Amino acid sequence: MKLMHTKLPDFKKKVQEAGKKLRPETEVELKGLENMESAKLASLRVGRIEEEIIEITQDPNVAKVEVTVLPQIPETIHCVVIKGVQKDGTSKKTILESMFITTPAPECYYHDSEVVEDRRVSYD
Image 1 (cartoon, rainbow, N blue to C red):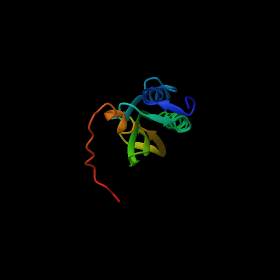
Image 2: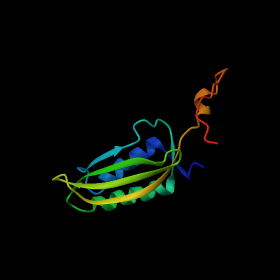
Image 3: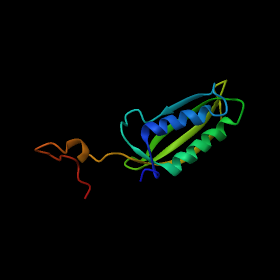
Image 4: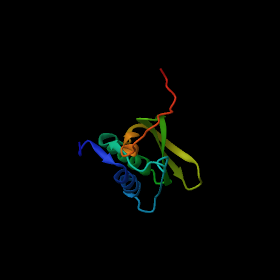
């Protein structure tokens, strides 16, 4: 399983490294994962996202790369928006990618509770 999944902190580091690979002065902004403390991401998708960030930064006019992760099916599938921003603030190219993010189940947070009251809405 270790080779199939990338831990969240490693993903954040890989995004930064990919954005600065061709030009270290390129600004890289990652948004959408601020509230996620622990997660695992599919390593093959992480590699694709790294390649796509490098593709965006091949344009010498790109000064900043914005990587935004948006929930598509919130429990698992997220949409990753990789956008190259030029010095004047306009966007020249954007790549959309899907990312599967696995987060801990609720049970991980209440496993030591004596009483658990489940008041969530049932969708039966």
